[in-house]
Length: 209
Image (tube, rainbow, N blue to C red; front, side, top):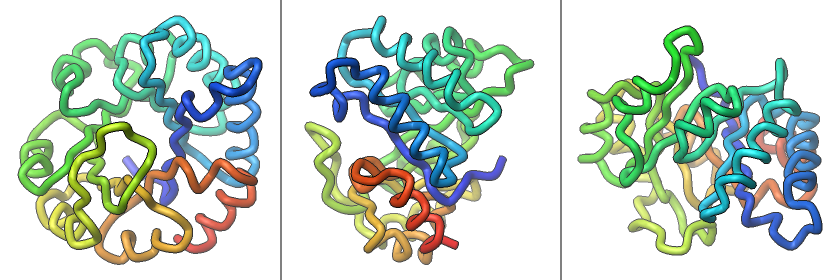
């Protein structure tokens, strides 16, 4: 598999203030696609599974034949929405179990979050297609973030695996190149895409080459 240099993440909580959050997410996704995004992850840390599935299905319609759609945490919702893959955390369903849920013919991607070199090494032997590592920098997108690993943490992660590596956590247009230069194949971004998403994607892709 080949990861795009930019890995946009849409966090549903960022759209809670809208009258129709699902519609707002879809319009935001359309702007990401207009800017050149070819992969989008949908994240919803609330307990509202019905809204999560509704949004996932609408995003599948928006991204169909245009971009990969990855669902955070929930392999069952990934399957129900006919998404392209699932991204799992340390406390989620195991990658092996998720692989058994996704139909073989779908060949869905499985990503896995790690937060230090040891976890990266462990993930390297798992049935995952890519490994995410972070937080690289300070981030406000999680209520209880893990310890910041810095650029050197990404460098250590790169040395611990040959799988595609996604750096995440506090990444912006100002610091994304630092992360790529130490071995990250892709950078995951949430906050720095929220304002003028199409232009932000264009800028990231221009910087990342």
